[in-house]
Image (cartoon, rainbow, N blue to C red; front, top):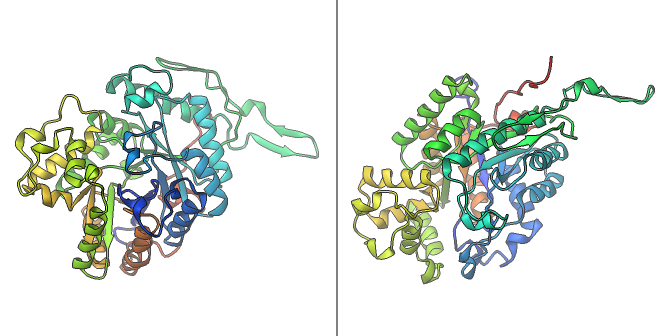
Length: 442
């Protein structure tokens, strides 16, 4: 181990057939793999074989317009992770759910139920939803502004923690001889009345096997960073350059400490898309093959322009991003943190659009190379203190995850930077996070 008991941690972003828009075109997959439980069971088995910490399931509850060229759809993450709890034993299960479009009592109950059926392996990836069409699916004509969404999310999380704490650890007596089931004095109503929610409680589910499900957060805007410092236990961030990553980690940990939190109890796990082969040239060719499968409507330049929020004719393949494109456009709806991270990296490096397209996929950094090169990249960032590990984002599932587990993980294990076995049963124990005290306990 490096630095006492410090070790690497890995989540896996499990989206559809994989993160790349052409993933579903892989000959090894069926076109409807994204709705097949066995597809996700294979992914989960690979992650568990690699002793990875947890599986994170993204979600935006709306049909995306890109359906013409790819699945652009997902199963409900809470239901899917509940099904996977049956076929897995150790790997963590982290569904994404929005605080803007769910009622707190229902969601708190669903996540805690997942935690129980999985034996304490649940987390919750808290998002606030930026997609206006998703809001309209829930009868909300206009999404609240970002500040309000995050203010609501902060109250939502505090309320959820109260609901998860409804039952003290020893509230359940279970004495069959005396027919005493529980101590009502140790089951507490939240009695919450705030700016956005009024909830009585208590929750009708006993406390988590790991104290509480792990809170994960994925926003990197100014509001997202403030929210992370206040609430997140694991952060799925977007970082392209090491220097900005070090700065990000310092800001988060300092802000958390200022709020009275232990900054060592936060795991920073930015997204990483590894493309692995026996040689660098083979790995590059592998990524090029994937890119070449894209329909012209989804060509990389066009996709990058859409992602930035500018017309694709503004981008020249062999020139850097024009300076005017480094400013967030007023009409851009997507995540601000992703935009800021990529445009800062583009400005710092002066990379051409062609170079950026070989290092960028959907808001995250692509690392192309041999297993040793990918392991070196991971270890360099980890040793800097900028990250506690990464959220691995396989371009194609499960094959790119198999490449990582079978070829990169053994190298990291041989270097003493990653576990040789699971040492606990819960997601919290995998991540090295303490079990929180019950806020109602006397």
